[in-house]
Length: 77
Image (tube, rainbow, N blue to C red; front, side, top):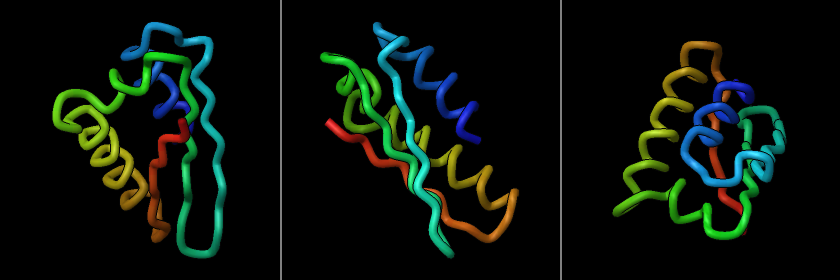
């Protein structure tokens, strides 16, 4: 899942080398913390949050298929 998320985000941003995703896992949730280069946060969020909403939808759908843990994407500035 982390690899899929990384590849999707690298395709959107201008500085793909600065994309860093950290996974924190607890009993019921997986939290993906996304760190980006300068100026790329807006590209990942998109107009009216459409890009990040679509990424979160794909993330939640694939995690529901895998098992019972809930997945959350957080963008760290």
